[in-house]
Each structure stands twice: as structure tokens, then as C-alpha cells.
Length: 100
Image (cartoon, rainbow, N blue to C red; front, side, top):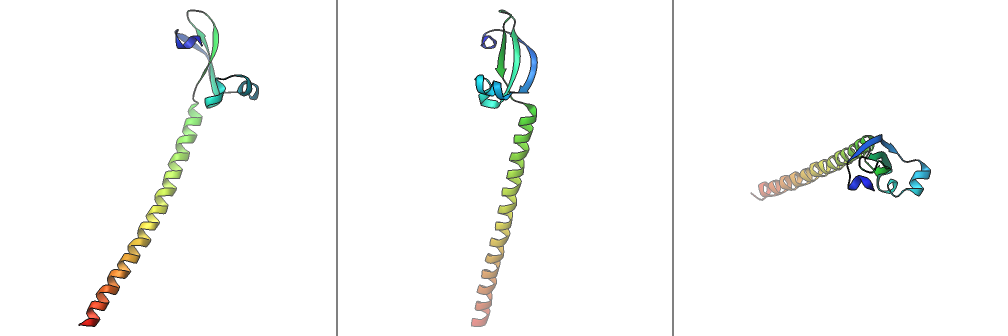
């Protein structure tokens, strides 16, 4: 992995690994995407793992959607709990008025 110690030029932009690459190259395993680079000093071609912008956007929007759903569930729980507490307070006031 010459790109760790040398300057490099990106020859091929970040792209999804083929099924063969995914099985044979260690660089494909963490993210499923690689880019081809040429190291400046040794003039050697190598592959470097990368993160796809499309994949990152998909993960981000999935996270946002999940958080919106969780927020909606908790908002409903808060409203239900508030109604229960209001009902208990009204019952308490009604009992106090009846006892007078």
C-alpha cells in the first residue's frame, strides 16, 4: 500500500467493487468501494478503499428517517402521558370540591 507513505494520484474515482473484487481484495471489505491510485514515487498502481458519496447520503437519510420516527413515537407518548396526568388532576380537584 504505497499510498500510505507516498503522494498519489487518483486514476479511477471511487466505485463499487465487483463481486470478484469483493472476494479477492481486502480493500473492498470495509466499505465495498475502492478507487485506483498511482503512487508518485514508485509509479505503482494500487487500490485504496473509499467511501461513496451516494452511500453516505443513503446512510444519512436513513438515520434522519429513523430519528424522525423515534421523535414521533415519543411525541405521541408525551401527549398520552399528559392526558393521563390531566385526567388525574381533574379527578383530584373534583373529589376536593365534592368533599366541601
